[in-house]
Length: 153
Image (cartoon, rainbow, N blue to C red; front, side, top):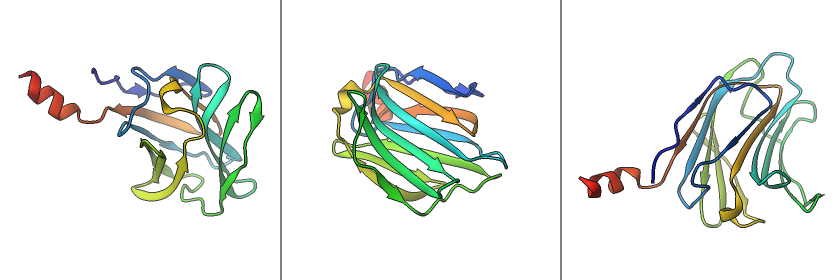
C-alpha cells in the first residue's frame, strides 16, 4: 500500500480523496494556523459527497468542539467538549487516528477526544476542511508502512 503524498497549502474550503480509504491505525495530520477573526472551522471525514462519518468542528463563537455524524441528510446526536485546545492566532497540529472502534483526536500532541464510529470506516473516502483556518500541510500515514517496506526488501 502506497503512502499518500502530503498536501501543501490547500485552498479552503478543501475537499480531497483519501487514497486507499481509512483503516485501523491510519493517521491524518493537519498543521496550520487559526486567524485572529476565526469564528469556527471543521474537518469532515466523508463517505462520498453527502454522508459525513465524522464531523469535527471547532466553534470559537459558542465556545466548544462539536462532533457528529450526518447520514441520509440527518444529523445525529452532538457530542460536545467545552475545552478548545487550539487558540485563535496560534499554530496547531491536529492528528486524527482511526481505530476499529472510532477516531482518536489529538491537538498539539495531547489527547483531546475519542469519537465512536456511527458509519462504517470502510466507506470513508473523502476529507473536507471548511471555515476560518489556514492549513499548511495535510499528511497521511498508513499503518505498518515501515514493516511492509521491510518485507518487500
